Amino acid sequence: MQNNRLRILIIYQLLEKYSDEENPLSTTELVEMLEERGIKCERKSIYADIEALNEFGCDIMSMKTPKRGFFIASRKFETPEVMLLIDAVKSAGFITPKKTNSLVEKLKTLISDGQADAMESQVYVDTQSSKCDNEEIYIIIDRLHNAIMQKKKVKFIYRRRSIDMMNLKKHTEKTFIVSPYALIWKNDHYYLICNYPKYDNLMNLRIDRMKRLELLEKPARPLREVSSYIDEFDTQDYSSKMFNMFSGDECEVTLKCKLHLQEEMLDRFGSSIPLTAVDINHFETMVSATLSDGLVSWIMQYGPDIEVIAPQELIDMIKTKSNSILKVYQTDSGLN
Image (cartoon, rainbow, N blue to C red; front, top):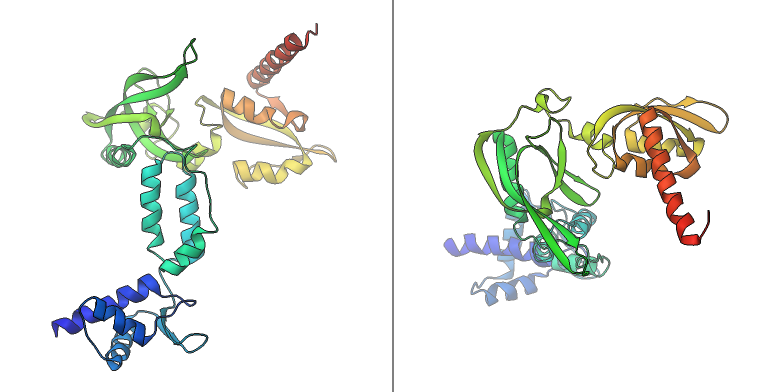
């Protein structure tokens, strides 16, 4: 009896690992695989076990051509879904190469070995050049989640890279104690949204630059003291107002845009923003954004296709940035 229970579990395990529609396992193959694991059985026992597994709710189908055998017809994750997850893990800069490889191998167990091999040949992402080297990342994320849930402060060392006058790479480190509110994955990096007690606003810090993070017993500052949010942090709203994750004061921005940018504005700020026709070539919209260098750079990438109408402070920032860029090129080219 004990042998029968073990056999049916191993049969399911073998089908899950090795079978798919392109690679069914025949009863002969299943008998041989079981014998390799020290379990002897007859072909009719295989049929009975598979019938029992289907009655339990497993979706195991049989086929006769081009090859006779059984395979798992439906899984929790389909191959395209696993491929998307693997792509995301491989391209995530905050996951180290070692942890990337470990996660990818775990994700591949969600499909058959044959499907995983075929998928691996189709997917390539350069995981070495853009990956961080912080092996504490899992522990840090877990502790940050706990701190946010418990509304406690955290303490950590924050590391930044720099190059000195001798062209040597080095790191500068600073200890932070902050009140954490949320985690955001944006621009291929994972950020902690938090408050540094010296200021009454929010700041964004990259998680892959943190190390030796500790959960403190000190309560975090109430969110309403440092932001416009009352009791709950609105990740979607905050993310839509951030540009390249630069912090700044929130303001209403009026933009005059070329017509071909309508879809881009709706994708960036959401479908609820107003779009008002100005003439046959332009429309105006008003959005909420943080006044920062990130916003200036974002607007300037569109050149003459976007004109800032308000506020004046943002207009002045763009003028200053434009003049500083022009000055660099005038100096380099010897122009007056």
